[in-house]
Length: 298
Image 1 (cartoon, helix red, strand yellow):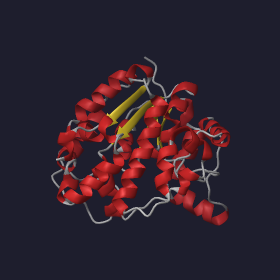
Image 2 (cartoon, helix red, strand yellow):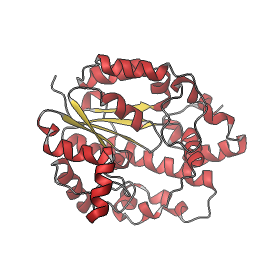
Image 3 (tube, helix red, strand yellow):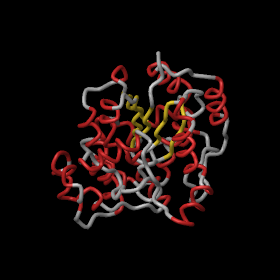
Image 4 (cartoon, helix red, strand yellow):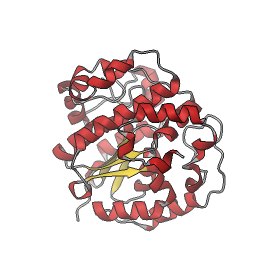
């Protein structure tokens, strides 16, 4: 089976980074890191989680054809490009690796383009889903917020998917209410865009918890489904991660791959009160119920 390009997406803080790192060990794939990140990616991305407007489709099409430029300019552009391994990778792929490797686009912010890349550009797609309580705790630990104007200003997104949610966006919500509503919005749109598709169609929805607890089998299954060799480098990397002993995250560290993945899936339960858990569940439903049962909230 010929290896296809790969999109790894899902909400931010859902495990897209480590999944991308694992598949980057394939000899036939090349990792491109968050080109549609509003702050750090390519030009003309003005919203977190751009939707399939006419303008954004043009930008996505251009990038996939390797016609792009990064946001920085002048001396700052040169300095930041060559200080950033991730930025350099864009140009290495554009001018060299594209001739004999397929891209892995690791980008949570392309979530709303999952079906578009799959259908128009023949991408295989992995969509990561993390428990809404774990998602909310992870954001709170990093002191990250979200401005719903990123959705409100995308009229097509609201009109086609988020008419009910937009009524809540401008209310005076608590932190957990807001982040749970964000989770619900992201996965509501995703489900409506990829409804009915499955692994054989090139789209796999992967729960973070199952992946973390059984990383070897999860990656093996995805690899077999997508015709990617599950090679020794991938297996060695997974073994290294699974051998980690530490549980507690280092303060304010964005990605901490030195923790034991099997033990951290329920780490949030030590820090979220029953009251806050009920709030998260209320604002993430009914979408969370499509992925997580009653027991997962205990």
